[in-house]
Length: 147
Image (cartoon, rainbow, N blue to C red; front, top):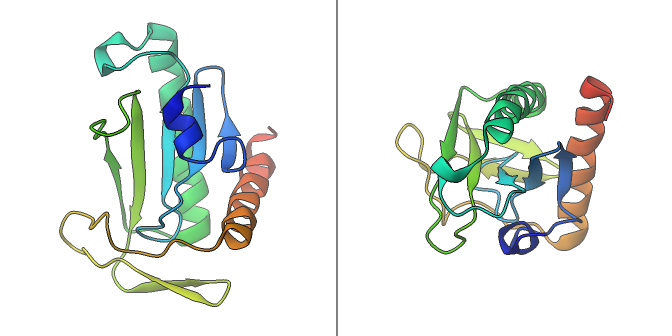
């Protein structure tokens, strides 16, 4: 597996997987439901992603938006492709909302709303809570998509 996926906790953080993409829970929850969509191909440029992976990206994005809409009822969604520290092709998926969302007794504010997300903000739940959140999202994905 590529180093970016491992950095973001794969396989413990896995929510969904396709032939070309991994959907992972982002450890720091900039907002509730913050995820990372990682290309499984060994590429470090978006233009180097195969046509097959590009086709699979649409399905993963549609599924991700459906998942997060049902979980956090976001108002907007941001896809950030930064690739400075972690060079493999990946997107940070940040659901955006005005105010706070509560999960497991924790409050998750969108500190940047309505401007760009503040990536250093948010909460980094302890590993057991992260596992619980990843599990909840994976369960919802499986219910909606069957795998």
